[in-house]
Amino acid sequence: MSLSSLLRILLARWWITAALVVVCVGAISVVSMFMPQKYVATTELIMEGKVQDRVTGESVSARSGYMSTQTEIIRSRRVSARVYEYLPEDIRALVDQRAAEEQSEGSVNPAGWLSGYIRRNLTVEPGKDSSVMTISLMAEDPEVAAGALNSLSAAYIDTSIELRTDPARRFSRWYQDQLDVLRANLREARQKFSGFQQEHGIVGMNEQLDLENTRLAELSSRLVEAQDQSTQDQLRQGEGADSSIPNGATIQKLRSELSSAQAELEDMSTRYGERHPEYRRQLSEVQALRGSLARERGIAARSLESTADVSESRLQELQQAFDRQKQRVLSLKAKRDELDLLQQEVQMAQEAYNAASGRAQSNSLESRLAETSVTVLNEAIPPSLPSSPNIKLNLVIATVLGFLLGVALSLLLELANRRVRSRFDIEETLGIPVLAYLPDTAGTYRQKEARTV
Image 1 (cartoon, rainbow, N blue to C red):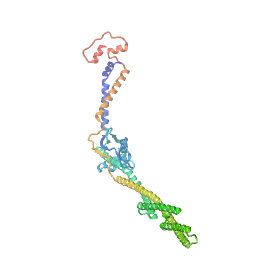
Image 2: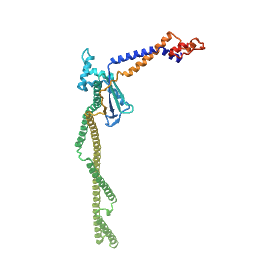
Image 3: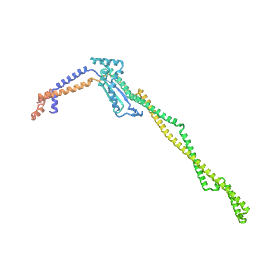
Image 4: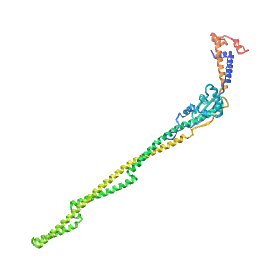
């Protein structure tokens, strides 16, 4: 079937299409008149994508799914269930009336009815390239739509505050529990530190250690001097040098006198003989000098021995004092090391307690902070015109539907009772050409075609 044939069929049965268009438009008009009018209220919220880290307290950018998360929170039952609490008195009365009408059987629960109604008729659209969230609510009453939507915004803001402050409150309680433990650890560390000081009588460890080190250095110097002196005394005692003993001059004098006396004695022995009285007198003098020299040497030997003994005794005493002082210094160093460890434990416990105390105070303040990153950009106002039913759109749809039905019905009728409406139908149906036809200029187009045929 060609396009021209289709047009002729439609023109021939135009009344069917027109009738169906009229019927559809009329039916849709009647239905639209009886359909309840619904109004759509809209509000816009600004979502600041900043959240606070619970451990460090620093503000960081929200994750990519922040807007989607907020969308689900707005649609949640937790938010919708609180809307009734935020309704103004006049809007609440309308909601109570509507809930009583629809919940005629059983107990009336306006809050539950409103929660379900909002979740069924709520539309949330997050901004694609912005932080603006658009929220729409459809209702039969424009005042109810605007009031319920504004109450929904307030309920969402309070819920978002609770979702932020509840973890902070839990963190605050957790930090308080940790503070008790850290406070006990700090008290225990301080008690260990002070107990160790009291047990060992430590007041100023560094000053005391410096003083003991000075004493140790002094004893070390004296010990070295004593060792040198003892060595020298032992050497003098072993060598027996007259010049190194205290009475060396007397011994030297006696030796000189003895040498002179012996020389004179030998001379007398040659001149007088051993029996001469002068010889015997000189011999007695030599023997007396020898006895004096021997006595002086004994005294000098005993003096050297005594000096060596004194030096050795002093060296031993200094060595013992040095060893005791060395042990004391080592003991003080060990105590200082242990005291440093205890002091480090106190410092670490103090730092941990201070950090936990700061975070506990921060979370405590945050749990009481009634601020949110959500701001109402535009509040919902009662719409002046209903969003549905849309009469114009319904009429356009009805016209298109009636036209399509008319075309379909015309084609079905044509196929059921085929007619020849032009020479082209003859050529197409019989497959033979039309040799001639008589055009008729008068009459309608349909009459012209009939005369032509």
